[in-house]
Image (tube, rainbow, N blue to C red):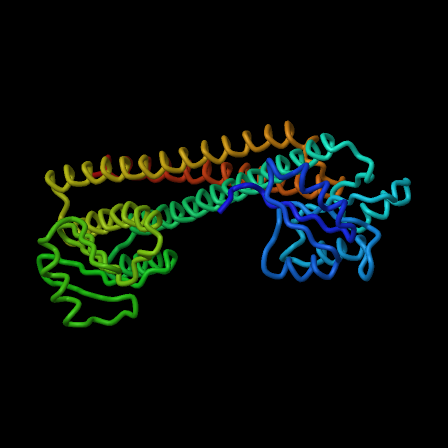
Length: 375
């Protein structure tokens, strides 16, 4: 098994094939075929990096072969270099119109051919790296966008939680938030007078109530496959469909749900008991924990923003440095730049949205402080 790039030589003249094989053998793996049909048949089960293709051949000529290669989704990225005795300007234009990547006369110096091949291989590597960078940048954008939407859910819930006047209003806000996370959940409220266990279908099942009553003493956060328990003194939640196939999302949900459960615990105590000095201290502790949790979420957002900006900036520099060497057509350059411009605009809009979220969180903290001052 060799790690050398595979070069296919297609020429009906055996002497030409032997000459090219001899020139390429030290650096590349080669295969020689003698007709366009043989070439197309071979490509159905294997692909070379580059095809050195004669133009004048019996049956399918080189232009027809190249056109079929470039029209096929499975083979369109194979580089085709015409090597032909037909070397006029019209001949070259016909070769490029057929989809060829380069066009050389048969009298070309072999060292020039080797340089051309190496340049094409280098450009293919650069294009692949560029595609990977674009994919990574888009993935970073999507993660940041998702985190922004998740933070919105937490923010909206806390706003509703603070003004909930009874358990029904609190549970309505809770299940609305869980629906935004696409989670099937069970909520349990434990007050001095009652234990209320309700699932997202607004049903109370004895088995779920018993399970959550037992789990409340087994730790703050418990996870069993797709099930996640988060326990506070007066409130517990059970997630029944945790997205365990996405560990990063599970990690973010764990943080978000802990904030939400903590807020529920605080509001249940405020609804169910007269707020005294001890309650005042508990509220202050809740404010601190909530602020810390929100700061943790914001730090994660900031880190992803910096990463996305870094990737975008690096990609822009790479494109400016490499664009001239990639040999792209004008319309290809335009499409690539439009992709980058669109992604950059998306990033700017995302950062504006996150700035609004941070302002909203600041208003929430201010509202909490005002509420605390009235106690």
